[in-house]
Length: 143
Ligand code: AMP
Image (cartoon, rainbow, N blue to C red; front, side, top):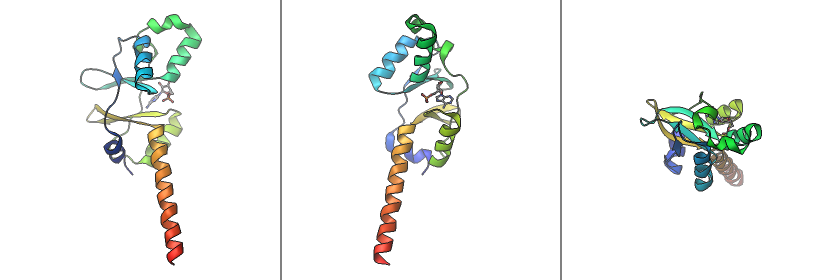
């Protein structure tokens, strides 16, 4: 299964923020949308960074709640690992495991076109294993 297929099933909506926004605005977005990360982008949808709930927890632990007034650019991860439509689900899983993160933006021609979370990957992976197990059962039963 490819990233393109996952996006066609889940949609291409990505919640984004801008570098000058505050952490408070981001946590309102995370909580309001029930998501774990936002991509930091500019008007042309270039990826400038990523900020996840883990970053927010780290910042508050280190600097206290006053840091919620800080700008996103101060605390985001600026070096973002991305995938493309043609990458496989195995590649995405390996990328998340190697990088120890749970979100990977999808980029095409330098522009953000979607995001894959670990939840999206696990859901499809479990479905694939179930389908294979069912096919094997049917094969054995009819052999
Ligand atoms: P997460 O597991 O996605 O909550 O993110 C854990 C840490 O990795 C946070 O510091 C994020 O800013 C960072 N992060 C999340 N996704 C990516 C990514 N695709 N590329 C680089 N860093 C990321």
